[in-house]
Image (cartoon, rainbow, N blue to C red; front, side, top):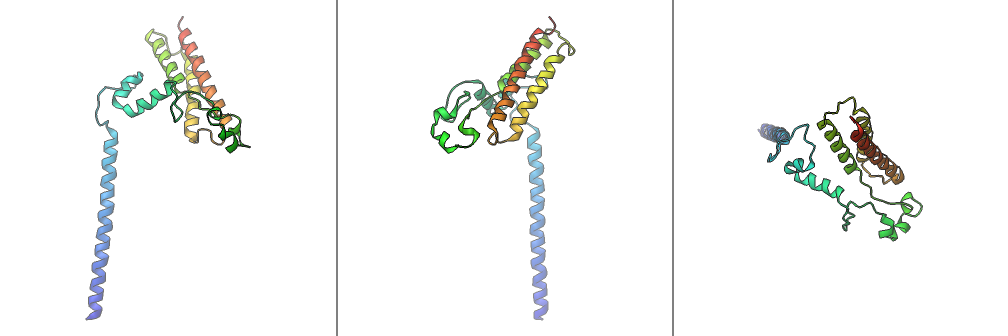
Length: 192
């Protein structure tokens, strides 16, 4: 009789554990499904956006946090966290030269921004298209845009923002800005 009682208790415990695990997995799957559905829609659609919308302020109506971050790359206000001004951190904090002694950071430690140059290029390409310039005429500007975008994407994807090779990241960002500015000139000259 004791053996049957123990066996029965074991089955009840196993059934309860299996039921709890099943409930937990089911709840997790429903939660994931709900989050995926939420991600498909903007919570409060204040502005209609399309693939053709290039004005950052329009996007900012639906995505205010991201727009705020974008605006901080445009201004040159110095904040206690650095701001968007390209400045030499070693001049602001001389102790960093000592901390980074022997590393590349002890020679040059700057903050660079390249996003605005690319946005200016997109705006110039849009203006050229509005003037009736063909894709063929914009080919040079579009190639320069791809080169600039690739370099900015590489720096962002690299994720350390140059911690291991700051000079190389600064060089790549400078190339991105240069390509973007060359593209702006090419787009402005196209169709003339």
